[in-house]
Image (cartoon, rainbow, N blue to C red):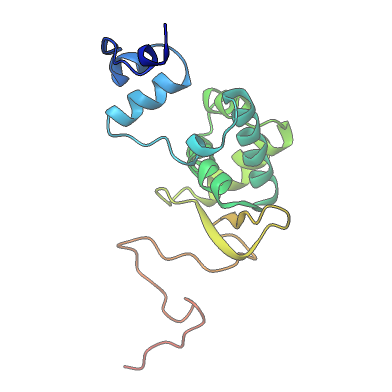
Length: 185
């Protein structure tokens, strides 16, 4: 075997299984592939580079803190990731049954926070049909890694950063909205 044999073209390698066939196995890659094939979107959670158990524990802790304080400062990716879960907790709280309390206890890590959810937040949003939280992006970045920072908060609460838009189709008290004077007739 001399130098001439090294550069000689050999038989072409057999084509392997397709990308979709490889992804049909088990695990996170397969799940992401199925979501992508279905046209769905896994959201910011896909880009967190964490194992599922760690990601779920972090989300539970952030939602618990959000309900407890009603406003928290975190990275934009994490805020977008917990927004649907925080909204789902308020939806559970609007129906105060033992079943819904059990479901909330499965996610929220502190019992007093569950009590606050069902006694304060549920009645507060009884008339609102979704959109209980909002993410406000901050201009400042986190020191160290320059991550984008945001505030996630519940709307229609005392001391909120910006008043919520009124629900569509609702009558608006123009004088009370954003401190604007009432129109003259």
